[in-house]
Image 1 (cartoon, rainbow, N blue to C red):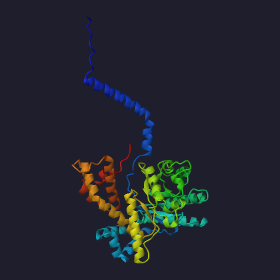
Image 2 (cartoon, rainbow, N blue to C red):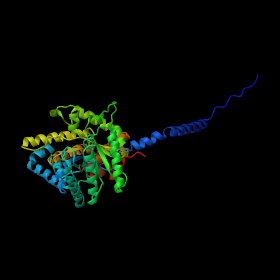
Image 3 (cartoon, rainbow, N blue to C red):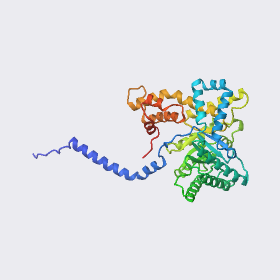
Image 4 (cartoon, rainbow, N blue to C red):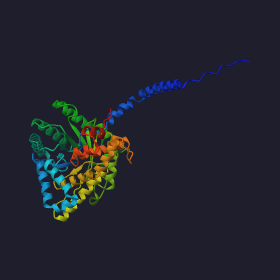
Length: 427
């Protein structure tokens, strides 16, 4: 009989070493295969930008802009509250919010301002040149005097063929004069309206690059936002949602997507009486915009309501209650910015915004504290939800609804730690 030596099975440690070596080899191979995709993900979806997002954009016809417009709007908004103090206290739901809103209107009534050379201004031919020069000088004067909005810019006419030359002329003249008068492009943004193709965004990217080269500016000094107000922006002729490639065609210059309530509704054939921020076509467009912008660092802004809180008390009540409800509706859907068209809309903008953040602060701060401190909780939040909680709290601080001291007391986090968790960047 012949003895056969049985093979000795590998030891557990040898198997573990083999598995580790195999995993490292396979992961290295996948690094090579996915290198391009990794780079594209970082470039195309870098995460949110670290600076605050304004809660609104105020549009004013450019020829009506003066260096003291922002404090003047604040005073007009305070006057509206004073004229209807009992009504506003009722809308606000208490004195605490009224005092917060009054302080905001006295200190920073307008967070983002757009000087409008498009629909709010109209077609004035070559007479627009004089208004361009005057508005640029006034904005520079406001910056130097400290009365400018923290964020500002212009909306010029679209790059469609009929208005293209006028739009480019206005943009070029305005920025040139602004810089000449000592103004700055920090937190300055240009609104590109009525976009109907990705080609227009690519053209805008080249236009801003050439202007920077001409004036010797740093790259990306000129940034722009896309106004989504045509059906072609949402759905192209081949069925593709064009808003996503439009963002990436901006090559890192696109800061925001702004929904244009009335133009978009009209493009879709909605009767004028039913055109609204809450119409189903508006919700569809904004959902597409939201998905396209997620992870890109491009912010989303809702549109406006043209029902103003002006007239007798019943009309003011109607305007404030409608505006407050629409602002709250937008916030609940993750649209953290909107348009305001009149000083009397500022009280309802800020009272609805402050109520939203203050009502949700205690619960959000507690969940955030429990997540960071790893304490026992009845809610098991994941990292993505923790980021959303931190972002909610950070936005409340940014707009003035919540103080940094309240955040530190409730969460144990300072502003830097909160910002890192709320707005991480992909590396």
